[in-house]
Structures are given as C-alpha cells and as structure tokens.
Amino acid sequence: MAAAQRIVIENCSIATVDADDTEYACGYLVLAGNRIEALGAGSAPEGLENVVRRIDATGHLATPGLINTHHHFYQWITRGLATDHNLFDWLVALYPIWARIDEPMAYTAARGSLAMMARGGVTTAMDHHYVYPRGTGDLSGAIIRAAHETGVRFTLARGSMDRGESDGGLPPDFAVESLDGALAATEATVKEHHDPSFDAMTQVAVAPCSPFSVSTELLRNAAELARRLGVRLHTHGSETVEEEKFCHELFGMGPTDYFESTGWLGEDVWMAHCVHMNDSDIAAFARTRTGVAHCPSSNARLAAGIARVPDMLAAGVPVGLGVDGTASNESGELHTELRNALLINRLGAHKESALNARQALRLGTHGGARVLGRAAETGSLEAGKLADVVLWKLDTLAHASIADPVTALVFGAAAPVTASFVNGRQIVADGRLLTVDEDAVARATRDEARRLAQLAAQR
Ligand SMILES: [Zn+2]
Image (tube, rainbow, N blue to C red; front, side, top):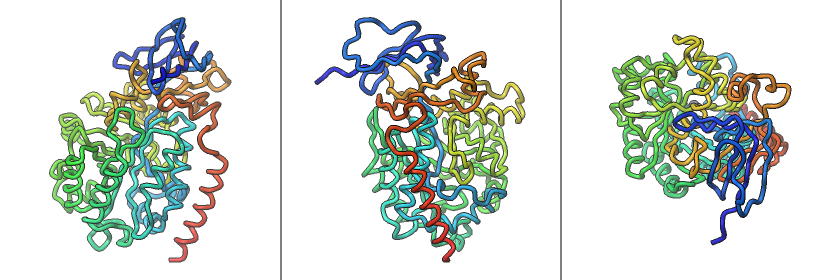
C-alpha cells in the first residue's frame, strides 16, 4: 500500500478543543491521508516524506470542523414564509406546502442547505427528514447523494410522522405515513446506507418527528428498531409550552417523562431544542447521557424560549449546536450560531457567566460529535482523529483588532473560511466550495422554490 500523502499547515493559531482545551498561539498540523497525524506548537517536524502541500496559514485560526446536529434540508425552498408565527401556527401554515415536496425538490434543497453550511466551516452535517408523502420517490437516497456530492460527513436522521389531523396530531393526513410503513422504510434506509466504520461518510439514525406528530406506538417501536440495528435515535423534544401542554393533556405527563416511558432516554439518543426542561428533566438527561441539539436562532425566530444550556452543561448533559430547518432560521449557517448561542444564553438566568467563547466553540465541535456518537473520530484536533479541519481567516478588517482568535471567531462577524478539509480532502478554498457550483445551486433552489409554491397553490 502506498504511504499516505501529507498536507502540512503552519504558522496558525490552533484551538484543538481537546479535553484540556489545548491551544497554540502559533503552531502546525500534519494531515496524513484522512487522519490528523500530528500537531503542536512551532514549526512542523523536518524530514517528513510524501508532503504534497504546505500551507502558510499566517493570520488564521485552525479549529475542528463545525458539526451541525439538527436541520431539515428540505426547508431551504420554503424560507421566508410564516415569519411572524409561533411553532404550532408556523407548522400548520407550512405542512400543506411541505406535503407537496418531491424527489427533485428534496435533492435540490439538500444541495442548498449543505452548500451554505459547508462554505461556513461545517464538516459534519445531519438532516432530520420526516416528510415522506406517498409516491414521491427515493427522498432519502436523493438527500444522501447531495451530501456525498458536497463532500461533508453526514448523518441522515430518517424521520417519520403517523399522527395526522384525524388522530389528533398537527400534520394533515396526506403528509403522514402508516406505522408499519414508516418502520419498514426506516429499517430499509439503515440497511442500505448506514456505515458503522470509524471514518464513515454516511450514517443513518431513526428519527420520528415529535410527540405531536407521531403515535406512542411509533415512538416505542422506533426505539426498539434503532437498538436492534445498532443506530442512534433522534427527535424533537420540549420545544414549546404548547408541546408541554399537549403532552400533559394527551399522556398525563410532561415531554421528558413521556419520552422516558417510551424508551427514549439514553446515551444513543439526542433531541432537538429541549427548551422547556425543569430540574428533574435535566437530571434525567444527565443520568441517561441523553444528548441535546441546541438551536438558538430557531428558538428565537419562533419565540420558543431559551434552553437552559449552562444548567445542562453543569449537569453533564452532552450538548451540540443546530441550525434547525431554514424555514425557522433563514440564514442556514452554523458559524453564526456560535455567537448566537453565547449571546442568547446570556439573556437567561446565568447572565454574563452563562457561556464563554471556548464553551460556545466546544458546543459547535466536540459537543456536536458527542451527540452524533462520533466523538472518538472527529470534533477535536488530536493525532489519530479524522482530518476534519477549518482555517478561519482572522487578519482582515472584520477581526484583525480583536484581542484573541477564539474570541474573534465567536464574538466577531461571521469569519471567512480560507480552507476546510473533510476526511483530509479540501472542500472549501477562499470562501468558495470546490465540490459544487454555488451559483448553479442558487439558481436551482430558486426554481424549485417557485415550482413548490405553484404546486401548493393548486390545492
Ligand atoms: Zn427541527
């Protein structure tokens, strides 16, 4: 076997986000094949063989690639609608439109969502897709193909809904699957696409949508299915006061107790939002190591509230960051969520001590890897881990006078990405994607958004 080709990156600040938060004011990284081989202070060791590239990263900060832990790619073509609604009203306004999504739309919207994140330093993405109207083709396959083409590491959370309007749920009946149909399709998706290996580019999780769109049987059976197949579980939880009320009325308990009663707390589970959690809910998540995808912008956009992230972290709950779907966060960027997570949490109970810049960066990197079950592989810069690395340009007008590079990245404007590597392969150069044509993606998403609006208007 040929020796791995090496890429040497030098003269940059490095925030490793390892267990000790090790940082180097001026250091180097050696990437060998798809792994990080070495890193440290000063210059790279001399005499390295097979060096195919040397990057002088003066003026840059190197961090682990960002990891997005909650998203709905299809919403890229329904941005800017129902802009002044709370969650339930927003869902009722949008479900009839989403129910018209077909395979070309799902593919094109996924390309838009992925391109936006990747050019902003995301190296691992996930998509929680739960709208599978009958007869719409292979939506999961189309989304996975889009991720493969963009070049990011990817988890498809294969979602589902089986509680339509006639069963007291929120989605219209034509947008839901049957219980057995949803389970069978989810199992088939795991068997076809899930790769359990260390450097997997595609994984699949089992992901019924939410307590108010899914039957108790589907939640329970989905948990059993995921554990039988050895994959992770994902859903929405404790997002709004309305959801809490819904759970009390229908099940006689709050969302966290309901999840526990259906087998949905555990270290193989992560949930989006978790805004309305009391002390015992947080303790239950900590005890079971259930993860959280914190989505500050979406929670603000839908006026859902402020998740108690400092309390979760203090209790030992694994927490990552999420964009959430772009119908409730039109920017679709994750690097700005570092800043939003910090600022929004300071408006909560802990005020200025809520989160600091290093904690925000950890949420967006190592925390994300933990909730996706991939902390051994990515999420920090350490020898032996996968070569998922971002170089942020911090020597221009926007950042050059900010005292410290991690503070510049988190508190400052959205920093430009000079280079982003996934699995050792460069996918971004000077803020532009190398893998897909951004302008073509923009045109295609605009066309598909128009086609969807016309289809929805015909009903
Ligand atoms: Zn969501």
